[in-house]
Amino acid sequence: MASRLSLRVVALVYLGAVLVAPVAVVAYKTFEPGLGSVWDSVTTPAAISAFWLTLEVAAIAVPLNAAVGVMTALALVRGKVPGRRFVEALIDLPFAISPVVVGLALVLLYGREGWFGDDLAKAGVTILFSFPGLALATIFVTLPFVVREVAPVLREVGEDQEQAAATLGASRWQAFWRITLPAIRWGLVYGVVLSTARAIGEFGAVSVVSGKVAGETETLTLLVEKRFQNFDLSGAYAASTLLALIALVTLGAMVLVNQRKELS
Amino acid sequence: MSGLSASLPRPRRRYATGGAGALGLGVATLWLSLIVLLPLAAVVDHSVQDGLDAFWTSVSSRQAVAALVFTLLVSLLVTAINVVMGTVIAWVLARDQFAGKRAVNALIDLPFALPTIVAGLTLLALYGQAIAFTKWAVLLALLFVTLPFVVRAVQPVLIELDRDMEQAAHSLGASHRTTFLRIVLPNLAPAIVSGAALAFARAVGEFGSIVLISGNKPFDTQVSAVYAYKQLESDNTTGAAAVSVVLLALSLLVLVALRFMEGRRHRWNG
Image (cartoon, chains in turn purple, orange):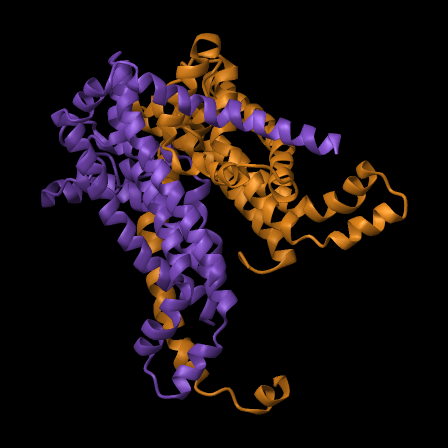
């Protein structure tokens, strides 16, 4: 019994020191100067534009990866096509790669010296240091989430119901919309929540491809860095707390979705 | 029931799934290639564009080697701490009962939800005076961002684990320690290893949480990801690409090892 208690204490103290205390201190320091100044610093034009830019990038990356992710999961779990294992093996790559490498990769593909640099310049298309670059970086880092969450669910529900639907004359679309999608919905939602959190919070990859122009290519996480480097600590804390609030909402959603997943 | 379904021809199986597989896999491969593989190929290509000698010079420069050695050592240390603390936390969450356990359980995912730059800033705000711009700061930042991996890998296994074996061991006179070492730990080992591998891969590539707090001092607190970033900032794209290829190779190595290990137990993610 004593050892159980001591393990509990060790675990909770560790979590307190590594996770809770730092986040609590930032929340405290944010609100120390008063609510008014916090509000002022998250409603400056640069902050508002960073907020919307962050949401826009997520709004591009997450639905795209959700749609392709479901298709990929279906192909990997239900398909019998050779080459499946190859895709399986590579799909996790974005999880294991440094964000700096992701950013650099996009620079070397679309940048001035990059493979497509000359062609893009001739065509007058800019990708780096503008919205498409941010979107591509975010799509890269969030690519595996939906596949990862949907594939195990698909495997678990099996294909009996889909086959029954097909036997009863349902087209592939009907079987997908009425049988498969409802069965995987909580796995899909969970993957979407995770991708959204990552899309909003991505820093390294966007940092490399952004160019960091205030009001144009500056996302919320980049705003935190810039304010910190400009010695605007309270501004950095305020923007951080805004991001932390988004993270808390994400955590809440994760708990809720997990409960639903276990129920169904 | 099983006899019945075995005797019936499986109706329209190809119609239901086979065709979708080919199209889906095509789209998946195209998407993966455009978004992930093509950019990575550009990195590899760029790293050797001035020849293999230039690549080697970039990779083996004193500063690059120092950064890589520090990255690997600190990542190994972080992984070791995670193996111990992650298993303890998973154990407490799976086996212990106390008020507020559900909140603690939800909290574990905080590092996945919190942006890395914010994680770095929070650690700086609390521990900054004591450890800013030291190796301890890097260690702490990495411990923060890698915390969930081992916990989330071990916890479900621990919950599923049949407690009959442990009770049998106890009734045969084994101590708590012996039971844990000989019964529980062998069952947890694959989950611990896969959580540890993911934590290691994450630690090796980590950037956002480190960039503010490490001070980026060459030969001291500079990690490879930050080194690559600095090379890129000073327009040495070839040097940045060379270091990136090394990081990329490490990522691939971890993924391949993991897949090999999991492949022996069950198929992908199952």
